Amino acid sequence: MAITAEMVKELRTKTGAGMMDCKRALQETNGDMEKAIEYLREKGLAAAAKRAGRAAAEGVIEAYIHLGEKLGVLVEVNCETDFVARTPEFKEFARDIAMQVAAANPQYVSPDDIPQEVLDKEREILRAQTLNEGKPEKVVDRIVEGRLEKFREEVCLLEQPFIKDPEKKVKDLLTEKIARIGENIIIRRFVRFQLGETQG
Amino acid sequence: MAITAEMVKELRTKTGAGMMDCKRALQETNGDMEKAIEYLREKGLAAAAKRAGRAAAEGVIEAYIHLGEKLGVLVEVNCETDFVARTPEFKEFARDIAMQVAAANPQYVSPDDIPQEVLDKEREILRAQTLNEGKPEKVVDRIVEGRLEKFREEVCLLEQPFIKDPEKKVKDLLTEKIARIGENIIIRRFVRFQLGETQG
Image (cartoon, rainbow over all chains, first blue to last red; front, side):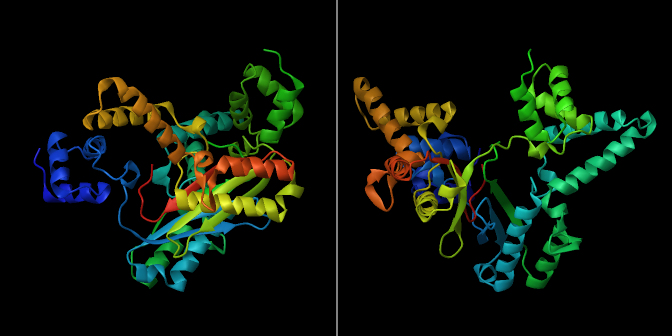
């Protein structure tokens, strides 16, 4: 495999190792970035594994702790420039998203993030539930798909009604902000801790 | 399998379903709690899957956002009573833990939480690194184990030097707090978001 200058540069960024060392590491590992990082670490040339995987992105990390400190949320919202990240409008958007997560407890950012096995499992449960309600076999599939759609809307942040204005979905709010601010904005990830809930 | 009153009670707490329904669900699923929850959901008798798994625990959820909003931490610290959770000393402890996570970037709460495959991989890398340094074969194992111990101390919150007083480890601080406050205290979980880092 040909080792390009871009690959060498990426490995340098990820490990902090010298250019020639990075090139050699990539040659030795046939261009496999992960293996090249390990190679450099084994040679004592990489700063640390944890530097790996960082990519440039602007934005903010925002927290929201609900009154009483029994519920907390952390979100990352990305934009293209630090200039935008510092604007009150962008910060307010990040804060709204954190409050949305606290109030509406989504499990995923978008429907694409739902693992297939979760959907399959949910479909199976909904199907049994629908049959148990005595719905005729021929309409069961349609009912199940409708309920699965509702499930998607409940568990995905972007599909949820926005808590401050339930007429629009969170994704509509996001589109508005992108149009007004003039930069792409991505709700990258969130986490929500509720006191005493079990993990996983 | 015998269905005990405790099992029925647990299932009730988790699903909000009636006592007789819970008993029947457990009988039908031979006492398997997860399957019993699914059974109740299929019958339309359980409130929602997400209620499952909650357990009683007191404490606080605390957040720390570093200046500039490029780094944020969320922690859950548990204690036995809400009375203690509301004390300034307990809250200060939770805040110190959040700052520790922000500053020292641990990956796990305690050494027991490091997955075996992570330790195996690290041992393998350290071994190759040590051999590459030209250390004699007969002392390599001892050096590797020493370095692995250092790795554990670096990546585990409880083993790290406390940032406000590096003479003691975080676990020593925890022990002190337990003794002073007179209740068991558990650092349950944490998450740390750094802007632009990739997930997983």
